[in-house]
Image 1 (cartoon, rainbow, N blue to C red):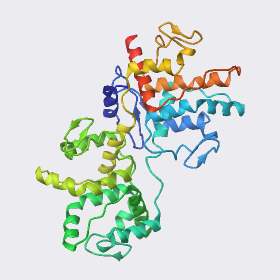
Image 2 (tube, helix red, strand yellow; image 1 turned 90 degrees about the vertical axis):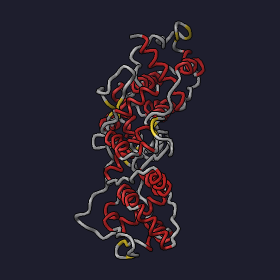
Image 3 (spheres, rainbow, N blue to C red; image 1 turned 30 degrees about the vertical axis):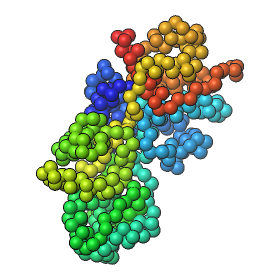
Image 4 (cartoon, helix red, strand yellow; image 1 turned 135 degrees about the horizontal axis):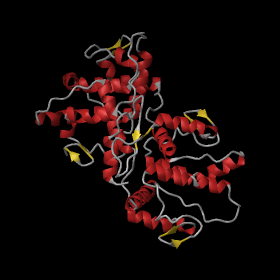
Length: 402
């Protein structure tokens, strides 16, 4: 998929990570009003197609395959597509062994399913309360802040923040009080500690456990709205120092790069650790440090995370070459050359979106379950970049046929 296609996808990421979290599936020719990949619909696909009979999601479901809610967090559409293809023979064999029909996926279902799996590690597992309690002392938070009536009074009580149990509430409080905290810590001779994402997760768990219970406490922040996050990124002047895929300031890192701030805790920890340098850079440029509500913080995180949905752009020529290297042309032909038993891949229509290609790849599983047992070429393995190259080849081929 090209950079332009993915830029348009990210721009139209309208309810991503919200109650109607939707991931657009756009090609060059589609408008931003096109249909979207919907993780909520993907959850229904996961159940109706029988995926949950073999796979669990965060402990709920089958035990035959891996728990899909506990695999690595920085997986992209291309990573998930490659995993589905690479494990297809094994999955097809298990389905055949259980005398079940091989489930069919159309392009909409395939896209929704991938979107559902993409969201599963957005919230990480809760932290360790005891570890968080130790960190609250060792990081010297306790010298300035109280939680549950225990601690210093130089800074505000953290009871309300703790009651929410949300890293975004903690991150917003840490950011908004950052300038004041820097001055107080300097005056008290307290060295400002760095915090890792896992440490922040433990601290949040401790704050939640230690805070007094209150029926009126705010609930934890839900995943944000990526489109609102895009607007906020400019309105709060983040764009003056940071770029997004090459557009914007060059003082800080490009926040549109894959792998940055993969979840709430990564983002919040990075914001805390880099706050002194960020605030100093703003002061030099006469930029007032913006205040952020927890909801706004969640929206910005959703916007930044949206760039992880696809991996790096593919190369059409490399995709064409892969069809030979991966022995796809043992069965298929390409411009009349290669195998004769399956359609010519240069003439195949309808593979004009990533989701359509995934559905086509998935359909090979039915051929495996119906196979005669005759010797076939070794199943080719694909990585994320190879999937991207194949997607770009088929997207370009489809465009040339219009």
